Length: 416
Image 1 (cartoon, rainbow, N blue to C red):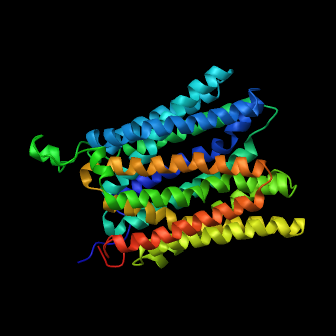
Image 2 (image 1 turned 45 degrees about the vertical axis):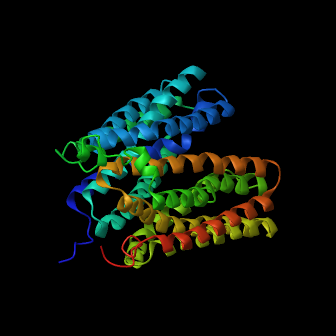
Image 3 (image 1 turned 90 degrees about the horizontal axis):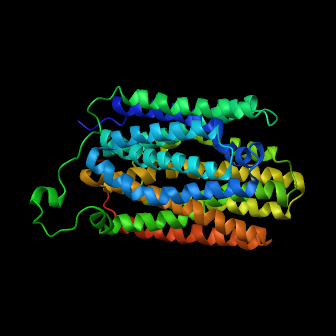
């Protein structure tokens, strides 16, 4: 009898905890630069530098997180990350100087870098190839739902004239991470300890085959997936986070409040569409779905570029529609990419495989905004759109090449 595609009970608990922590993140995530720059008086430049520094910290930590997840199990690493991030977020409410901002930012970045890849590895352990894609899709939906709910609550609560409202939000965020920690306590013995099967573990050190990250990097298909992800995500998420606010405020001259509307369109499109998308894509080629992501994001950029030629009101509509269409591409990428990485991963290297993907995310979130900031700051809006379209085109070609490298089962064309 084939394995049920429904979400396994253990995965449901992990998803519940993830949803709780996402609400907490939604309370504070959009406010960090404003909080550091304006509320604490450090300046927007310092706020931006702290955020960029946190991304660099994550880059350094990810390989260690993968190693620890494979040695100790992903759940202990995830639980430690939640505690560290909870402490860091709570301390944000006490930041009063530039050194303290960077110090607390380090703690938050360490916790976040520990938690996310460890969570992916834990979900990989408690799922099978048959239901893994659905689980990762629901994870993404709950993440966006939590961020959206948290964002709405923070908009109702926070006051720029009362710094204490920010402190309460950061304490609420810290509590949400501890709630996730409590959920994980209900999973005794799950995701703990090393899984045997590595070449050096079985061979007592005499086997000449590579182990650890060398074994990960020796996986030719994984290398292709990671390279494709770098190109596509550089042309996607990072560009969106910087491009949409600039197109709305600087280029088209609308209020900054419309930036929040655009991200609300993105978030709630994901929440509304994800379950339907999961049903549609079941049993379809993953490589062709990634190609579809590239095509969908290209359409989104074409619409955004068209706003340069439109009447201001129509231009705003085009940017908002582009944000919604981009979200449809996200509902494809979110279940397909992590499930493919976890299907490729040997059990004893699952942590390192997921950390490698998280590393790609961080690189893309640094390079993409950097390119956007330089080109849009120089007034090269059309050239920037063309660069993104070129990136989506290259990613589409790479997805076709990946299809030839994957087995029918890994590609999702035949049942697990």
